[in-house]
Length: 139
Picture (spheres, rainbow, N blue to C red):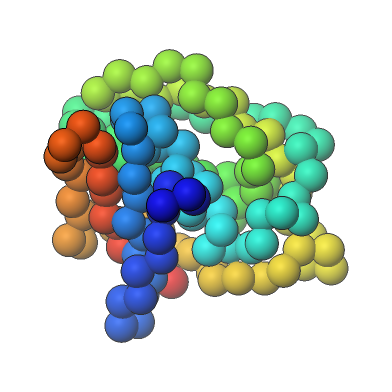
């Protein structure tokens, strides 16, 4: 699996199965997977950076909070990321710098309108040294 994620076709919604050799890679690939649902990320230019900080009591809450913060940045500020640098990650906090640009429907392909990452059927586990997460999004 070269991309680190695959899209799951779920009736009425969409999901991602995300892979990582460690938690940092899992969060990174989750973000890239989310952005790939919204647009073809190859057309995004790294023009500006934002800092994202998310805190949660659990790893599941942190993963959902992380994805929902990225959705919030897109919905509120039209910001879509291309490069993600996770600066700090623990079991209850993620701090990252995301570089990308403002989404422009004239320039960027419109994919799915993702409303939220949900806890519905959420699974995060480490098996044979590989982290996997399955997450469903409301669209």
